[in-house]
Length: 112
Length: 112
DNA sequence: GCCCTCTGTCAGCTGAGTCTGACAGGGGAG
DNA sequence: CTCCCCTGTCAGACTCAGCTGACAGAGGGC
View (tube, rainbow over the protein chains, first blue to last red):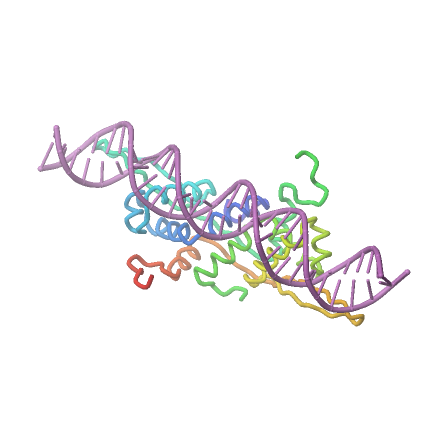
């Protein structure tokens, strides 16, 4: 996934996932250290439900992975980890990605 | 602007500007050839007001430049042009950008 | 005079994204 | 039993981006 040229839709999803201050901060925090959700919520000072939503988006975009760990004492804790990636963005990449968007070309509207 | 590491806020703006199929298509079309607005609207088959909005966002993000040209016959035509840029995105860049977000650090809420 | 092309802005609708409080449940420690 | 910490999910409110049709104005060609 790192270095491959993504499809237009994937690019849009990826950029949308990253285009949020909260998510950027979450990613940064998680990249630095593997933490569990509640601790992360405390670090970033945000409500847990909100954090859950953002984590879902990041996970859907493949930027983080969640792992529910059941400790030896029985209590379960969800650890979150960042997934390394690399994307190079320039006009060429944009032009390339724009070619394969679902419903990209003009007159591509038939099954609607 | 190309190659410089943008601030967190700038990064978010840039990504937000790019995270749209329409804007990707507009950028691609404009990167290929310098065109004027109405012609572009015809190419991409979208309403002009909508195109205007997207162009404003792209222009605000510094990805395109508009130039209102008054032809020798007096009619004015607005030409749009893509601005070359390069951004490398990875975990390090994210972590770096997350540091300088307006209101990033915890306990940075004083003037509100 | 009428018709055409272009630019730009406006009010208004709709839907998605965001954020919050509250809830249900699992399990350990005092 | 009571308190605490953890994981999830939910409905509701609220904001904003996206999108549309309509309008005003400038100018050329017939």
